[in-house]
Length: 126
Image 1 (cartoon, rainbow, N blue to C red):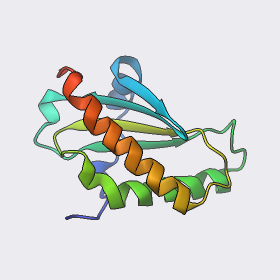
Image 2: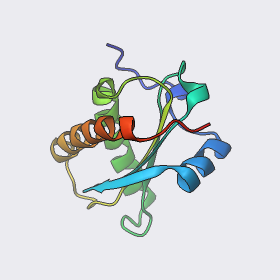
Image 3: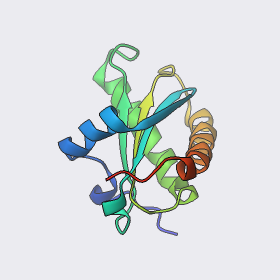
Image 4: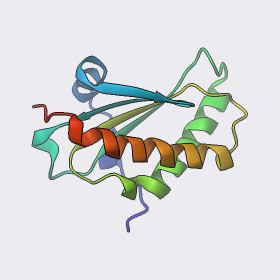
């Protein structure tokens, strides 16, 4: 298993981010709102993920960055749960700033398992 999270697995293309928010499917599983879309033309590339923490919930940038580091770590350790076939995922954190890693990681596992279940129903988009 590859436990790295290189740049090509992080979503940074503005066009894909807009498409994810406009056309993607979503579900809510506290403390995450999850947006996802399966791209047929990206099926040979690894999944891409976007991490977002609400400025409204966590005022200070230090706190938001701290939560993002925890989210990235939890995702990095458990990304093997979803198959690597061109899935674009947006993870929006809406929980509390004091949430420890021991709570975030099991929630991330639940989110990835639910995402794995939701994917077959999601039609391929182009």
